[in-house]
Image 1 (cartoon, rainbow, N blue to C red):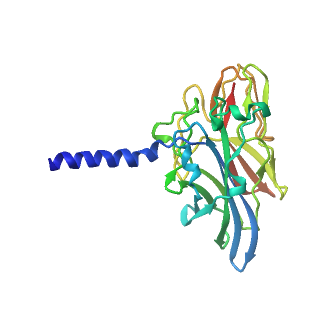
Image 2 (image 1 turned 135 degrees about the vertical axis):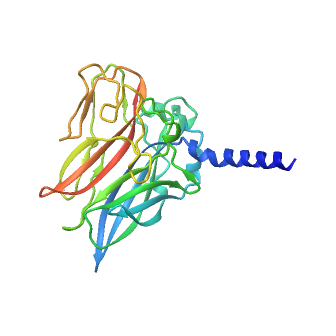
Image 3 (image 1 turned 90 degrees about the vertical axis):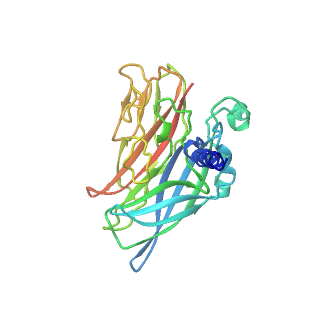
Length: 293
């Protein structure tokens, strides 16, 4: 009887703790930073993490109680500090699905069927001691007591055990401070099937650094060394269903042109690399859900 009770208890614990691995409420994310001040050898930066919540995810309800997002700070690959960035209430729980005004109540955020995505913003100051060419800010997937599980809407990636979402930005402040670019485009773009389409991050850099762009694999560990596998024929560099010969990505402008030929939701990660006088001074990234209807 005792043995059966132990097995029953272990099974229950596995079920309860295993639910974190199957969280499915985050449809994308971005991480940026802004230089605030220098005092002696201490350099203060404001780091911002924005998460895009999938209202149809069975664990989306955890956003209602999430007050902070976890951030790891690394220097030359070594963990320096971990802290929690507080949620910015008046910049959170905001619908960002680009639906027509008449369809606002037709998304999954309101009980409808159209893809419903809401924005949640977390922001706080980080103090860096000294200068380095290899600072790294990484969202560590912690959202209070829950983890940031990728939305299972995505058709172009294989989730399974790879479903936890991480995202990172880098900084080189050896030759002075840097501000990452900011993004001005919609984080969840909608496209119509069989219609020629175009998308740009709309990156803006206050430092006027030279920017280049790349399509990157979604990462699934905080160190950024494990990548989410893509479902064939999709890859990180070709993540969208497109009519033959129509998919073109420009590393100079970051613009993606394509004619979608299949209705689906697709995970796309774009990274911006900044250079100043030929030297890389930072990178930042946004993971997005492209919706083709």
